[in-house]
Image (cartoon, rainbow over the protein chains, first blue to last red):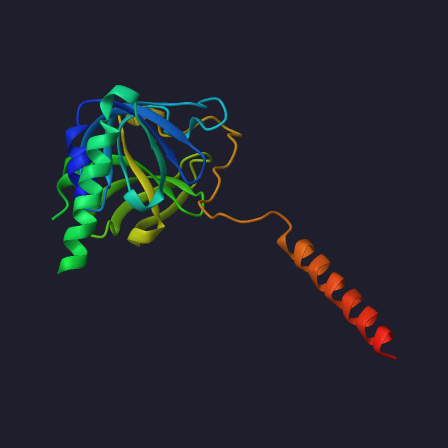
Length: 96
Length: 115
């Protein structure tokens, strides 16, 4: 659940999501759920000319399993803290 | 359970599938694993009526976007078709043919050596 919590801290920030069908969507992260399904608002597609399918769509739901990358700004994430938390979670799960 | 799609219920949405199909439809229902029940299904590019209702299995869904302007149901004519989400090597069979040919060559070399 670590990355679920992590994404929850990113709500209302501008992110770029690359999907597995090579489409890149830029928008404001509105919500996220336990499967890391994302909801973006005010999206813009990086290649609107080639793929006009999502023009006149602003609010979009993306299924978590089809996300390849989420691009974040460097100052949005404290990598040391995240790494630490990931380690702690890994230790916690082996102890069980 | 998943409340993310609740705002889209009974509205026109654009659904992209893992096969690269893009349809425009009215969202009638959904569940926890993103299985979607949609009605009045139209192709997004050609505008062709596909079905009066569809059940799409969750693992076929890529994204589901709310259509702001119901006048603009059609994307540009002749738009490039979307890619699917599979990750594959182009002409993979050619690569394996080459591997096979190499193996055969090695094999014949070895046997001729033994004789």
